[in-house]
Length: 295
Image (cartoon, rainbow, N blue to C red; front, side, top):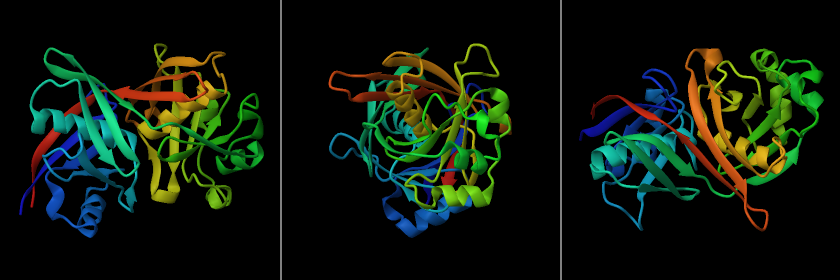
């Protein structure tokens, strides 16, 4: 049986930038083992499978696989899959598409320009804040000097469906200088829920952007990701909680992937609601690259 196959670039301003995603449609006939094998063959950071063209409880059932395992949630697969559903299953302008994932139903809102999807926004589940870490051990894990970590703010686990260790750095030079020291990294994550590290600083390559980030995930076989919606959603919650900008609301442009030649742009909105809950939205563009059949 042949399955419709799509490739898109997510969080990309131009084709062949951002984060690549493969999407397989009408995948109900595939077993989890077959999905895993396909994701491994694709060798993108994630591949998604739309189980059916028919909605289920107001949303489309979607499964996400990295080359190594199934994931409960991920950012760029959510936006990229919603784009494919709107373009090739629904086929008309709709304000929102809901994706049913392991973490729950994730809504994706569409803005249009000239009849085509422009910016897509996903609302992430409520952030959860975990343990904090000794900055010295984190610095060793990243092969940088201790004083390059911004001690005004904690190094902390945050999750909006997937957990990440968020690390504030002092400068773009510090971000560029990071590389994983495997011994220190494995020691750091041994007792942590999060296995992935996102570093950031307020200095950027492009003056119109607000933050530069890098994301390392050697544990899952991803040396560095060019654009990570889930991690940057965690970053947005972290920035609000710790009043990084001195206020309980933000609207930011985030650049990622510059150090590995796939420059990406992610948009973040977050605010602290009454009662202390933090709402997070992650946005960006999706660009069509290829389509065909998987046989």
